[in-house]
Image (cartoon, rainbow, N blue to C red; front, side, top):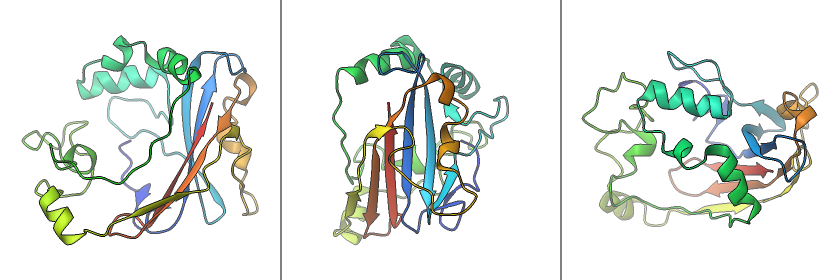
Length: 216
């Protein structure tokens, strides 16, 4: 968050090329019954494991994962309502996950606000220099469904190689000197992890390929 050199075309994670996203759900006591205390993210591209970028937002520490402290700091600096915390935060999310969730992946457009909340300045009339307003490089006039559906009617995405298992078991590093286990080194002593990996390939003018891995 705030690092504009990390994710995008030709950047550290090159969105013009196929890659795998790994999401790790870390528990408090090293078991699947423990409370959810952290969500970590890493990427694998061309055999290289890429650690998540660190927060680069004035007023926030250099976080590289989602924790209660990160959520509190982000909401404070961005001036957002603490709705996630009010609903129980990570602990409640973990309880819901233990009840079972369905992984849903899709490609879609936004008839409400043209997806500007994701990849442009939003709200569009707010000061883009304030934390949380600039979300991407797209123009505030972009993303209208009428435009997307007319000019890219055959857009598609393919998700593949979806995996779920113990942390570190669902992806590999093929480049010498890059440790696949490094992603969990900070929490390995106190957490149990499983993972789901999803790889997607797009055939539109969207990023050429993405993937997601989840661990609990």
